[in-house]
Image (tube, rainbow, N blue to C red; front, side, top):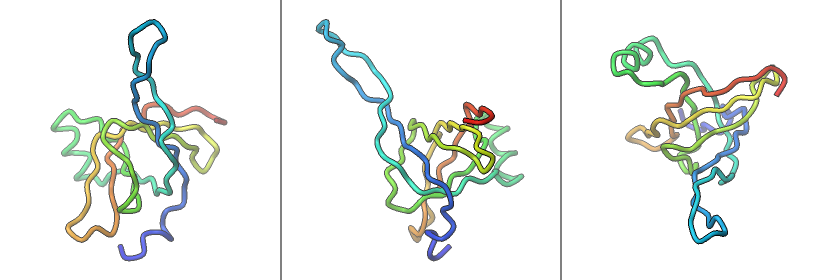
Length: 116
């Protein structure tokens, strides 16, 4: 996949857990936007679906990214699909091929709402 950039047809916000002071001497964990990435969202292959099912994984989509995109396990990716439906994906893992021409995040669709 040389020149992956031309295939990255969506922008997704990256949300990451962060710990903040709660104002009462403690801390709380919240999601904060960590950036925006260009991406391509695809359905997993039949083989990937079978493997996910056998391992009780919640892998529902593949998200292809630039190899330098700062996306990590546990992040939430937010954006809209081609129909304008709001989508949220929870990142299960991020992998790269041996020649790092792209990153692939295995994600679970956690929310999709008509019309954003």
